[in-house]
Image 1 (tube, rainbow over the protein chains, first blue to last red):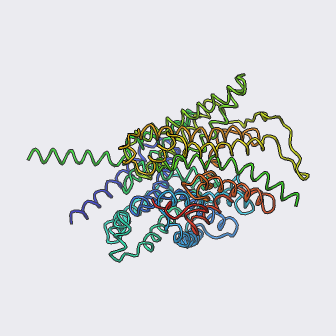
Image 2: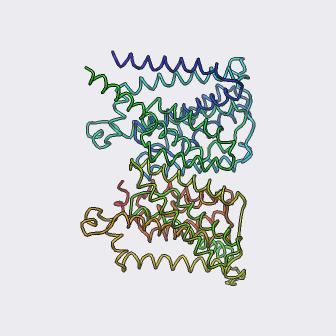
Image 3: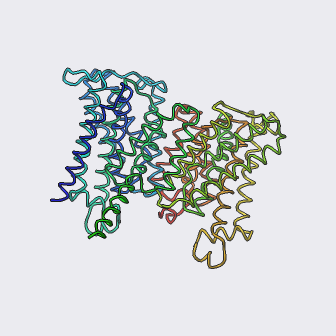
Length: 319
Length: 289
């Protein structure tokens, strides 16, 4: 009962923050950053399920998000489908693709797994760059406006509400998923695949399912990002983007649902602050990754653990 | 036929560079179990520093020496950072080296610039004529120097006391410690050697393909592909993997599509990982994690 209550208070807190934040926004640019952060957070939540709960690294999720987005965009621009239907078809295609490649890929471990996902990501990126007639090549292509049942999402507030609702729903779904038997199963796989196997868990099946879930979320968030920004280029599917996503997961804290939000927000907002330093942007970004890995390898969410622990200790000692 | 021969020659030339990058990976991986994602940036650092030291008016030999020295320092800095890290899980260390790579790219952008740079070949611009195809002096130099590095690395690890200590340390850290081997020093030396190998590759490559601050991304990844194709952890595998990769790339660029040239390394990588994870020359033991 208590745990149930816990989930709800956290969700309510999140909803509260999402409602209050726009009052601090001074112009459209703030909305843009917020929307971008949320979309990144969505991908990171999925990736976190894969990395933090199932213990599988992926250095290719930027490419999956990019490819998924391209499929949605090409279906609307070149074949005249509605955006919602395009995203749906893209989700189905990417889900199938994810399921097919997950079989051989997830047999690999550690560095080999990282390298295989990286390889697939780079191949996707190259294909998107080369197949100009579909993708517009390196220069990218413009994206039709996002119209759902006759309503056109043409202002930032509408987009913000859409993304915020999606975020709350995703987190709610994940919290429940993780607390369910399925979540326990995933943790058992992360902690010891052999042990999980020996008690009769079909390890490779569950790893595939998680992989597919994370790819599907990346597809949805990537597609929405393309529709929101009105433009897409192979840059979305680049190695750099994949790395950024992994760093967001680790910065937020592996296996922490809310950590994903911290990681995504910080790494989305930070480059915007650094643009005034122009040439130093990459340098500072690298330094931040290094220092986080050295001083805070458990991620930002771990700071809150310490605070909570201290409080618990204090209350225990005062008793 | 002549065409094919030309492709093979240029493939082998590039292949030797991949070999050097792959060897750099292998040296660090064997000693510490770490995959260094900033290996490509070591290559970039070697090439870029040489170019700018030459711009500064230093003589060729001094520029080489300083560039190699600078890169080995960078290798040592990476080792120090890794040893500072509080978490030695694989994911953390992968991201740490990725972060270091981004840092080095940013540093190169600030210290140098974002332009493409090249330098004249240091053995003259001439070329040998073999069966109606040309093989530049620089290409021959790459083959010779790379082979020399492979051989001397082999001799170093087999014949010298320091080299043997390094092998011992990678086989069994505790036993090596008991034998009085200073593990930290050994690891640091491995990082430095790896950086030196990479920087030499960067210097050799610059007259042929030119260099910029981003050149290390693809080179590093392809070098890693080379190491895995040959069998991660086996130095001989890095040589074979590098050459196979260089030749395949050159053939695909020549006969299939030059646009998909860069994809070759990763397609081969996936094929190897899926169907023979030990690599061509590795054994399955090297797959253990």
